[in-house]
Image (cartoon, rainbow, N blue to C red; front, side, top):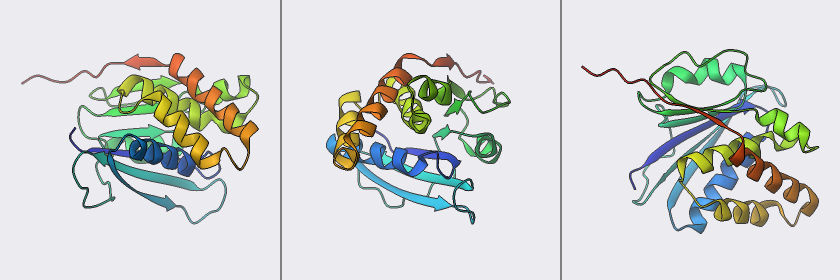
Length: 188
């Protein structure tokens, strides 16, 4: 597997860091090399937040991601900030429940997921991050869903088992309820 560079972005309180931690743990469970980094805006809750994950079979030299292969975007401000940085032909996931505009770039494959709506329907708005992660894992096949569930339980199950199981349900529901928009690449 070649190196895959991923950015996860949203506002503080959306679970961006938790998403990155679960993804990284699942990579480790499957024996992949992984590294990551977190960046917070100057605000506390409600400010911008991002996590970068680099995963591959070989040793990874640097967790810094300037041009991601894939972007998981949970809010409008993050779409505005990161859409242009994704490599041509890359993948972008958007939370259509709260992102009001369409992705402008036709050269990106898109996963559209009403993550916040799914979480509300399940009774836990904080599960939107895991609904988005479920759609991402289901589409990309980067990891087995079982590894992601195991990673989530290892990280959070002892702290709040009820909330962890609600997040597992959000992950599974997100895997079922996304729309894929193929990229339109120009051929020269």
